[in-house]
Picture (cartoon, rainbow, N blue to C red):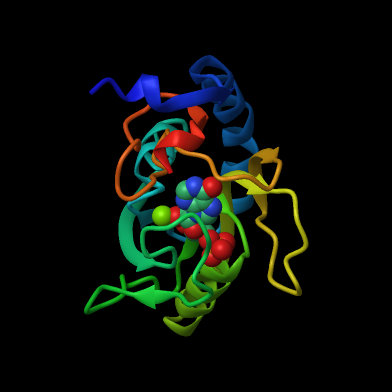
Length: 179
Ligand code: IMP
Ligand code: MG
């Protein structure tokens, strides 16, 4: 029953994440000035990271959420980004900070950035807690990356496997017996 028992290895500890977010926040704020700011979190994975990050951005801002799916419950990206909301947030004329948990193939950030620009956003900056170290065949990289990691499947701090393990306070690797 204890989720920690399913973790083979802790990759990034809570304290390390907190320290890195403190480091990233000032740089992110500087790049967003000039228009009303809206932080857009990609649910559900970016829930935890966004909550921690946006409390370190001491400026007037709105927060919105977008629901997309790309993994469909497995450990490999399906390659297709589905928008699950009926309506996208109103970002016209605003500077958008798009926040996701992890950059894998890059298709999610690419598709959502394009959607935000399509909605009339003045600027879109992208920020992820993690980026997998791999080729992204022409897909965009994130403007701000917390940590680069090896190309392996990770959970915790918002990231899930079949909907579980988002509540782990750290980023870790699942025990193979669980998958
Ligand atoms: P991309 O579109 O391939 O970049 O995939 C990004 C999305 O896939 C993220 O928003 C995550 O929800 C999910 N994802 C990618 N890698 C992992 C992982 O290692 N663990 C959990 N979810 C992941
Ligand atoms: Mg996800």
